[in-house]
Length: 236
Image 1 (tube, rainbow, N blue to C red):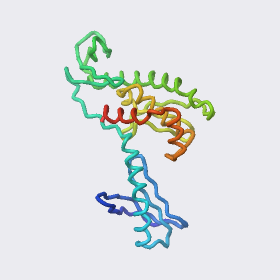
Image 2: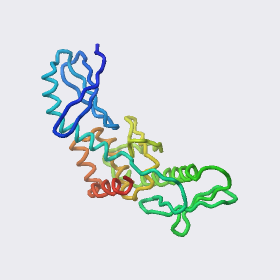
Image 3: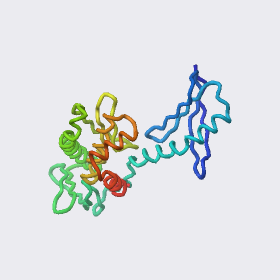
Image 4: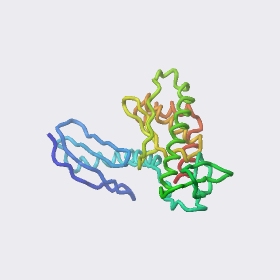
């Protein structure tokens, strides 16, 4: 039996941590940090306000660390106007956009430019988004197949790959072994794409960000921090 949840705020140093608090018939305090950085706290029914405050301050560094970890995967690519001369990314390289009228709708890389050919009123944004999605589907699948043998000793099955627009994540995986990747990731360098896929495959072995998880990620990709940083600096 749980009471109605309330929104509370914990002040820790210069930070304010907002969290959803509810009480249940349980013995221990439960804290969860979600990919969108929301925090939920479930406390035993007899927990006093003072005891709760002490416990949360003890856990505050961990909560902040988890939020920062999730934030590092949040796509923050600046919005585009889709006009001639504007730069757009593909596999970590910048291309100048060129929009032209044509007999067919087509997007292609041509002489260092990202060329969008339009025969009707379909917005260039729509044509380019579809092109990115198709490129992402092919490149992500090829990269996954290339990386999977590195996990051979962990005996994981080849996961189903799904391309899905996600406002707050580059990638995720489900308990049943499906890997979901954001099509926006195709704009990142190849090494950064490999890093995200490796990160998700590691989660099929270790579901949480434990020491064992990071040890596995390090063993598969020793320079993962470099590619994580490239991802953040290129697309943010």
